[in-house]
Image (cartoon, rainbow, N blue to C red):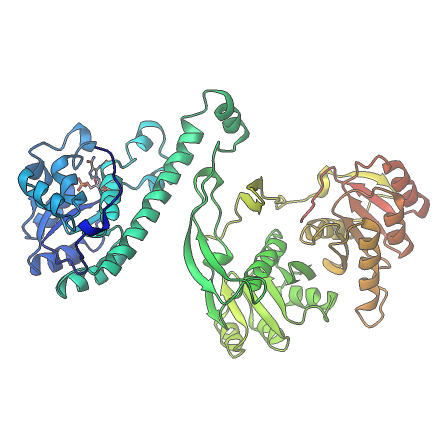
Length: 548
Ligand SMILES: NC(=O)c1ncn([C@@H]2O[C@H](COP(=O)(O)O)[C@@H](O)[C@H]2O)c1NC=O
C-alpha cells in the first residue's frame, strides 16, 4: 500500500506520551548507565542490541535482547539486528490512528515510546585512516533506519541520537512522559544527524568507490567530488548580519570528506568582550589569513577585510607596534590577529587603542587579565587544533564555487623567483621583498603593498585598476606617518602583473628600491624596461595571488 493523504478527522490528539518501552542501541555508550538506571527506575521496559544489552545487563539492569523480540538472531556480522517488522512496526505505528492501534494489536507487536540510538562511528573511522571493507563496515544501516522511522513518527515516539539529550528526556520520563514539542525537537535533531551522516558516506563513496566512469572519474581525478553537501550545526543566531536589517547566524562547519574545512574563528573560545558580530567574524577570519602564514611572530590589523597593517618581528609586541604604525588612523576599531601568545607588553599597547577583536593562539595570564578590563574588546583564543581549511567555498547565484585555499609555503619564497631588472637584492632587501609578497596576499585585489623592515608601510587595495592601487599605496605610505616619506627606499609587491608600465612607474617615481610581481603581462618588456631604466631591482614570481 502506498502512502495516502491523511484524513485530518482520523487523527486523535496526542501530546504527552508516557514512556513504557524503550529501544536502546548504542555505539557510543557515554552515560549509558545514567540513562539505563533512570529508565529502569521509572519502570520502563528496555530492549537492546548485542553489546548494548550486555552493557546494560552488566549494570544489573533487566533488558530484553532484540533477537528475542524479532525471533531472529542478530546475523551477518551485525549487518542485520534490528531490521525486522517486529521492531519497525513498533517504531512506525501512528497511535493517533485507531486503525494503526488495531493492526499493531492484531500483529501482537508492542509500540516503543522511546528510541535511543547512536550510529557506527563512520566519520571517526575514516578520519583514523580506515579504507576499503573496514570503512564500508562502519556504515550503519539499521541505526539510521530506526532513527528515521522514529523521527517520522515523532507524534508518538521520542528519538534520541546524542547523550547530550539524555537529561531532558530523563526529566520528561520522570514527569509523566515526553511532550509533542520535545519529540518534535528531538526528531529535528535526528534528521539533521542522519543527513550529516549520509553526507559523509556519500563523500567517501564519491572519492573511493565511484571513480570508474565518465563524470565521476574526472571528478575523482581532479580531487573534486561529483556532488558536495555542506552541513553545519547552528552555533549562534547573531544580532544581525553585515547590516542591521539583515538577519544572520553562524554555523559550525560540517563539510564532509576531503573537502572538509579546518578549524578556526568559528571554534575560537571567547574570553572576553561583547558578542561577536557578523562583521567581527569576517574581519577576524581575514586577520587570521593575513597573520598566520608567517613563521616568525606576526600581527595583522584588519578593517573591512583589508589590512591597515601587517608586520613581523622577533617579538610579538614589536610586531604589533610596527603593524599599527603602518596606518594608525585606520587601526582605530580594527581587528587584530597575532600568531603568537599575547604578552603583557602587547596587551598594554592594545589596551590604549580602540580595538573590536583580538585573536591569538593564547594569552599570558596577566595579558588576559588586562585585556578583560576592556569590556568591549572581544578576546578570542584559537582552538589548539587550528588549521586552515584546504578548500574554500563561495556562494554565487545558483551555485557554489569551491577552490583550494591560497597558501604560501612556510620557508623561503625567493628561491623560485627570477631577477628581471636591476641588481640582485641584498639579504635584507630580499627578506623585505619576501615579507611584502607574503603580506600582499592579505589585501583585496588589485593589491600593492609597500614594506620596509618586515612591516607594511603603505597598502593600496581593492582598486579596479592597478595604477590607482599604486597611487594609493604610495600616498598612504607618505601621508600616514607624520609626513615621513616612507615609500622612498621601501620595497613593493604587486599581487598580479602590471598590465602596463604606468603602475610600476608610479612606484619607481616614489623611490621604491625593489619590486616583486608575478610577471606574465604581454607588456612585461615595457615594465621591466622601466625598472631597468631607473636601476630598480625587479623579481618575477611566476605566480599570481588575487584575493577577492
Ligand atoms: N544492522 C542492524 O540492524 C543494526 N541495528 C542497530 N545497529 C547499530 O548497532 C549499534 C549498536 O550495536 P551493539 O549494541 O550490538 O553494539 C548502534 O550503533 C546501531 O546504530 C545496526 N547495525 C548496523 O547497521
